[in-house]
View 1 (cartoon, one colour):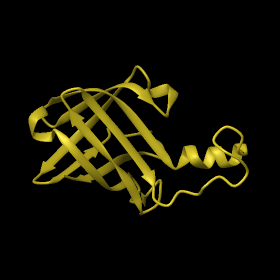
View 2 (cartoon, one colour):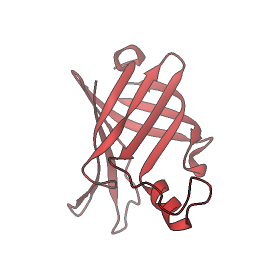
View 3 (tube, one colour):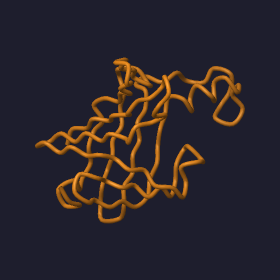
Length: 140
């Protein structure tokens, strides 16, 4: 795998968190939409819960805090540079909906099979009851 073999737009198929105790949780439900795109200029990833609820109490600036929190919880996005080394894709985060990701790196174990790409995180919260990996699957 290299930059050329992953270049292009990949549509998201699923997002799962696979727990050490066997649980499988879909953080945004089983119906998600979005993509990850790799180009000469960098990478951009957006994952969204399908059919997100519209605000009913106002617009993006004056909706209730609860509605804004629900919108934040149903949308993930980040962008920046990237590198490919073997089966590891490193995302250098320049922009993200999560402020704590900006300036950091996200490492993904990548499996490329034909027109399918699966990105898996390193173990999260290892050694706890919430130990898991996060797995995003895409189709070209």
